[in-house]
Length: 109
Image (cartoon, rainbow, N blue to C red):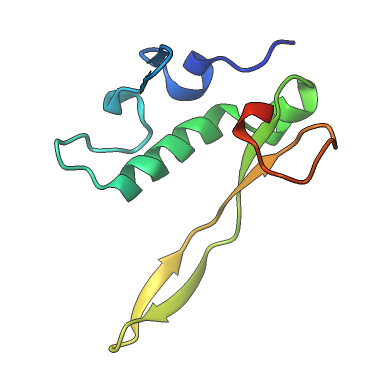
């Protein structure tokens, strides 16, 4: 099989050139697109969109796929001076490459 494509991971309108990556907000999972989305909400939406294709099942079936994203376990914690309750959701991003070095290099994936 082939390495996953930009469209498979980020949606039909995803494009790139030598200096930019474009992902339309309407392609992102669960995001209510606005002119003021937070950076964190955009990151979460990108991860959720990527998780839909970068599954462990696809990873196991395709040796050209180097990444899979899996859901972890939700938990609860308290934060702040009032000990406000927060839900903590986990996404685990797994990166696989031939064992040629110990540094994390995006160009290896």
